[in-house]
Image (cartoon, rainbow, N blue to C red; front, side):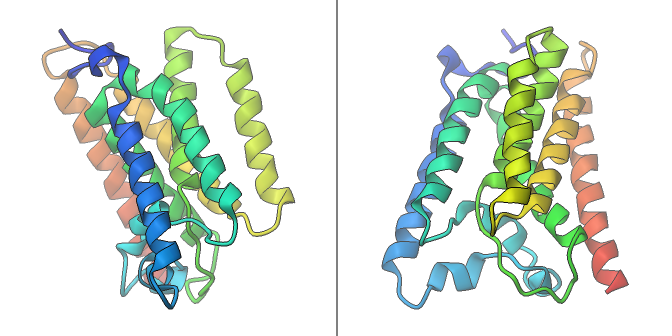
Length: 222
């Protein structure tokens, strides 16, 4: 039996990938606290200036959080727990993981596109991925005919905070939100057929290629 959008459904409605992502973020945060010389931040945080030489930071930064602000990781993990438990059972573990990682990368791409390539301001946090899940849940709920008004308010309020509160990278929020919404659309709007799964994964691979191409274009433009 497959899930509503193809593939194996999340067994018993359990959000296993969500819990693993939360566990990884907490484990990395603890390493940030115990390792000396700000090692984790120095090695894995993302800044546009690192794009060409250390592009993996565009993804690893999503597992780090601000050490001096416990609310940063607390809010992101709470939001991930709430959204993930609703979304993962609907799309299945593998597609959900792809949505999460694409959104995390898309958040970094958004930050890159709206900033100078020479910018050395480091950014960390799962916010891009979380906003991507917001966007994905919006698309899924709309496709299923669910009530999206509360979700729209939640997205709007949290996005607005990026312009009000200092030190928040709204560009990453926007990049994650758009990427997550597009990735979800590629999953839920594919008609049921023998090739459904192949089309879904090909679509997400194409979206990844677009994000990589946008990154290369920004680097090439200087």
